[in-house]
Image (cartoon, rainbow, N blue to C red; front, top):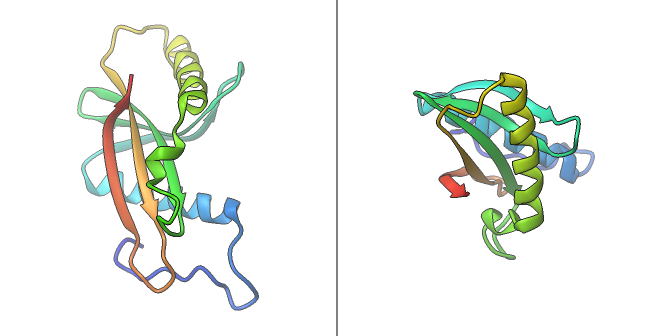
Length: 133
């Protein structure tokens, strides 16, 4: 998946933004696993609002991962899309996860995985650890 060229068209038209996002999340999960992380959960929807694309473990650290996928970088880095409102929603969802765990007394952080999918090219994946507080 990471070493294969992207095919964004399926012969009947190109992938829509939801399909591209789902593909990016699958690529990010494979990338994290390859980096020695354990993916615990995908697409956690908090009851009080907010969603976390991937919840992973990096050693003893719990990582709440936002995946941002783009088909090019013409409008900036994927990371740029994680604005204050998106961060607020991610924090809300992380609070819910920690509440369900029953503790906040563990090491945790917010990471962003940027995935750039250009047709005919291998995916470009970049992990930004501790992307925001």
